[in-house]
Image (cartoon, rainbow over all chains, first blue to last red):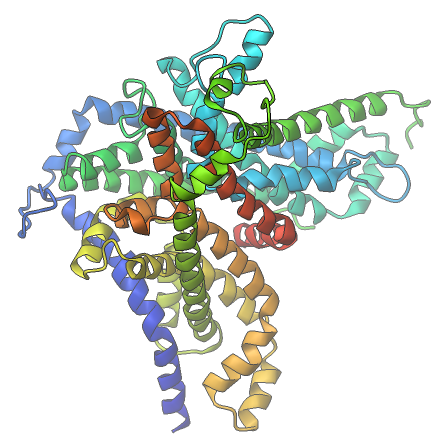
Length: 304
Length: 284
């Protein structure tokens, strides 16, 4: 009776969440794999299987490769730049105050900086996108170009130049992401025992040395997690591109990434099967990226 | 023992430089937001003129136009309704699932738990296409109910993951005492365990409110047709497009401010919980 009551309770509590999750999350993902093997256009009532045709076509698709290349750039540059900037700021905020008195101190005003830096993280991607569309305007009405003209430079077509647009969008992603990683790395740094720094400072190590010899090695795990998260964020960064560059990856496909192509192929061209094949490729890329990052950066854990 | 350096001049230089670096980054964040705020008081000529100019006078009409004509008020109300119910649902179902998965042994426990947790790593756009048709077949397309259910489903992985970790840390003795006193499992959960889990619940509630408030892709796919039902992020993206051919840029900026300010207030009040909530989720 007791057992029966327990199982009844467990089943009762799990029923709704598991049902919702299966219907709206699990089943679409499974269907995506299934649809990727068909030429479904979103209207036909029966699925027509075409085997791996979609995938073979994908490898001859120029747009696909361009999207993949842009993706590679995002995947490399976004984590690298964000982690470096965030580490630098986190170090300054937590330990930049020097070693006067008992233990290491944060820099003056570090609390204020932390609050400000983190704020872009809570803004909606749609809002950030629209905001930066105005900031990046190609004439003097854009903030950056307005300042450039004042200083006597020529205005730059941030989102218009094909060679520049992707980098301009990347800058916005970094702008939004840095604060989160400052907070993340700060938490990691707070967990490093203070005596380590004191001992090293007594031995005459400067702040630069403290950073490279103590903070960086001891923060390895946190940085690694941050790297994986940023890689996934790069895969997800497409909502921003959709707002800033439109679904054609303006200018002239220069900023297109795989998710944008998937979106366009599925919802504008109604080639749902083909779009799903791209999605599946992307899915495996994401998984490979995460596994590779964790593998290559894994090392003996340093016990504190 | 190293020699103490005489009157180290370098650190103060370094200290000065690091202040400059931090200050510049802070400016990079504050200035675009401040500029947006000021632009909402400008008129079209000023907006298309020198970007670094202050508004000539304090014009409030753009805010009125954004609220009425661009339906920001309506979008805001829709978002509040959707986010209220979806966060409520997420917290209720998420904590129920997390609780039994964390504290009860039964067949399939591990499988269900990892199925939920794996959801955090799935790239969402892979599901967007099929999800559209799932919601269509259920007859929930272009409805708030559909959007709420989808929000709940997609918020469950992180919520379950986070709260399960939290419920595991709660002491067994209390639950056992309640059972001896004759409290049912359900009653133990609602009257004893939930109140004990309050700090975790608060963090994750704020996290979900922000995440769902800012969601753009899901409404874009699921609420396409019916403009009256749109949420604020869709509204902003749409006003941005409309501003192009109706040439009403001040109200675009006013609408942006209206979307930013509530988030900013929530953020300033709860920033400690938000930062710790997001950080804890990543570190586990």
